[in-house]
Image (cartoon, rainbow, N blue to C red):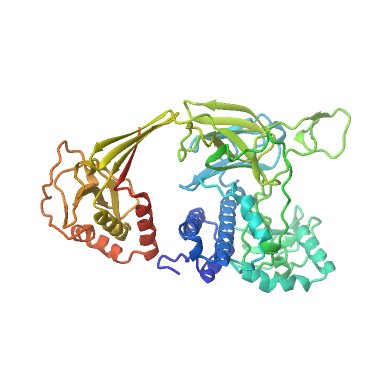
Length: 609
């Protein structure tokens, strides 16, 4: 493991241990789960960057396949953590109820995900929908669901693990290369355990799990375990033990709990992409798990990714079964414990009926006086993500899991507010959706211009449909530029860098850039930045600021001349900064160096008007 406790995703043993321990971790504290998601996403990005940056000749095919499989398992692990956050809110809905609405509505998230969770506790038949003003997302609930034990989740993830899902799945299924990755080793070593049970034993175990219910009964007064009483209250034993778990089936009889071995044979996959199974579970490995064959869709329904590009991440719009809530009897708190995880609520059902005494419930048999109603669509309105640039009204598309693609059917009543940057529409059912924009929205270019501005400078201007891009091309001292990129990477763990408008005035043999200490993840003010002058012979901090009207090479007060950028930073910074620089991770330094060399930011300055 690294010094920060995270594994190296390219090392099989480390990432295998991380995946199993994370999947088995029982902690459900919200901040902890969000932090775990943040760590997992960083590992995914690291592996993806490794696959992109490494030439094909330097990485064998089995290693490539290993990294790709690891990415898939890490993506599923993120989905599991997000589902745990939702499950926490639903299990504690009564405690989080809003007094004004009588329902539970919560918003939580970070820079990677935003979850809006609503639980139907009040069951008001006049309920229309709810607006999560903090997250700028709202939904419209179909009338047939107003009296049901349901919850609604709108989850916006700022990443997209679905668009490329089909190629990854096909690769995992059709590949003949057998590589142990993630939890694969555990799967293959324990697969023989499944065959040891007979069909009758497996069937009996399944029926036992389905019939039992776990009840956790607690008292605010008692702190010691006591012998449970034989009396029953409303069919539930009056248990005096604060944390005793009683297993009761629907008729009140007690059945023995299944063994740990039997529980392991019945893993549950929660809502979402699935869960990375922990080490103790036996699940068919991906290379042998059958996939649903893609279905044929009409040409007008499938989103052509050659024409459209998904932007702004993915939205999960789910209707879920509301788990049983705690009940309070004579100072006792009775909680029904369920290990089923999140469960989707079936909507639309085959028939949604309305009777004189019951509105919006499913009735198995027709009765006199019934009116069969068509299922109403579910409405959703969200603000366009600020992580993407939309030049025109986006097109909503929903995910088709059977075909593993984005489709355009089943969506109606599209409304776009250009001023508020909101998009609203209705879907035939609750579904995953994203926003599409034409991939060539800025084409054809209106005009372009390449003109010289000096002996070694030029301005390249491209005027597109919605944007104008000006690229200033400069030739700098080649060796000085390469050395600067290396030294910037060495100190990038604590020093922030920024372009300077004076770089174009400095000449061919000089480089000007802005720098500042950045030990904490906080916003920086313009006054925090200092100008650094780099030449082939020396480097120093300038007295002038970026906002000055004239250029001056005067050295800053109480500053010295140094041999290069690295020694300037080490000499002008605090001891805490210098200490962190000395212990910077070599992989981080290498990644920053490759980024700077690839972009050549000191030569090409991009200005978007």
